[in-house]
Image 1 (cartoon, rainbow, N blue to C red):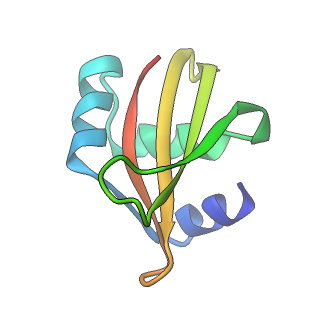
Image 2: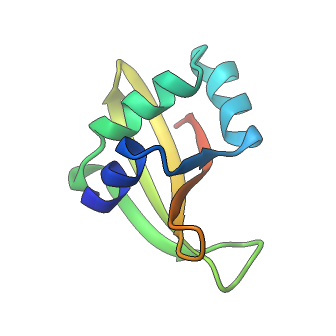
Length: 94
């Protein structure tokens, strides 16, 4: 999580349109809310690491948090090594 939080702090992240749309729909959250929630994640929220269904070369980290800013959140993301940035693929209600 330290690397994830460092990338966020340095502005090295991208929240996909799909992740932003579902966060808006499920929680009424925008980019700043998602970033604040991601910064509150820690290892106890880690669910699993798995290969992406869309790209077998991409490994995603999945997190579930039952009380993140008062919400039950499910998210997954990866670090794009080529661009050295965090890519948030999904952010929605559990």
